[in-house]
Structure formats: structure tokens, C-alpha cells
Image 1 (cartoon, rainbow, N blue to C red):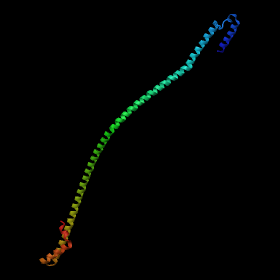
Image 2 (cartoon, rainbow, N blue to C red; image 1 turned 135 degrees about the vertical axis):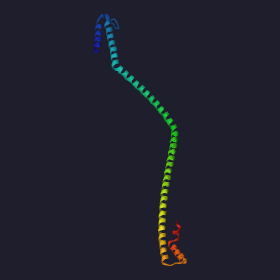
Image 3 (cartoon, helix red, strand yellow; image 1 turned 180 degrees about the vertical axis):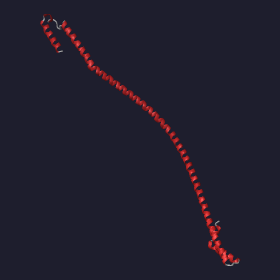
Image 4 (tube, one colour; image 1 turned 90 degrees about the vertical axis):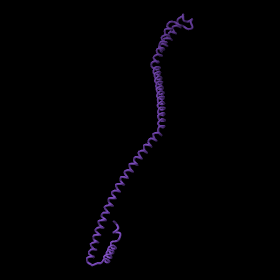
Length: 193
């Protein structure tokens, strides 16, 4: 560029020395026009070179930024739609919660009644088993008591027979002896059967 300026200055000096250029205010000769065209070409070349090196990357950066912003907007709209869909599902679930709660309560009540019936049936079976066992034990105790009473009666009868034989008794003496034996054993013993 400095070469062009120095060439232009040199041309102006030479043209100032030439007589034919002195009478013109603005000296346009072919060399000046040629230099102007070369400078214009150089400026356009520099513009396109700078456009390629600076402007195109800046344009690409702006284009990418626009695409990123457009993508972010699209993502935000999609997320908004997803949120609205989720809200609709949530509202629908909230409406169904009461129904589900009623169904769960009904199922729980049904299970509780079944469990109650099972527990009552098991308790009745246990009660019947205990009652049967108790009756069996009572019968065993009664039969033991009968056996013991029979043994006592046999002992008493043997003792009475021994007294009857050792003494000669008349009917009044026998009645008195029986009364004494009954008193000794107690009236409750004779009445248990």
C-alpha cells in the first residue's frame, strides 16, 4: 500500500513537471485511472478476504446462536406440553384417588370380616375341644370318686359285719349301729351318687 502511495506521489511530481498537466486542476491520465482500478480491486479483494475470514465466522456464529435459541424455545415448548400433560394425568389421578380409597377400604373391611369369622371359628373349635376335654376329666373324676365310695362302703360294710358278728344283736341294736356308721361317714358321702 505504501508503494502505491509513493508511486502516486512520484506520478504527481512528474506530472507537475510536464507542461501539459499544469493547466488542468485535476490531472486524470491513464496511469492514475489504472492505479485507481488496482486500488479498488485490492480493496474489494481485501473486503472479500475479510468477509471470508471475519464476516463468515461471525455469520456462522450468529446462525448457530439463532439455531440454539430456536432449539431452546422448541425444548421449552415441549417441556411445557409435557408439564401440561403431566398436570392432566395428575388431576385425573386425584379424581380417582377417592374411588381407589373407597375400594381399598371396602377390600380391607371384607378381609377384616373374613379374618374375624376365621378367628371366631377357631375360638369356637378351641372352646369345644376344651369343653370336651373338661367333660372327659369330670367323668374320670366321678368314676374315681365312685370307686373310692365303693371301697369305703365295702370297708364300712365289712366293719359292720364284724360288729354284727361279734355282738349278738337285735333289730334295735342293728338300727343304732347303722346310724352310728352313717354319722361317722357323713350323710353327704351316701348322697353323692
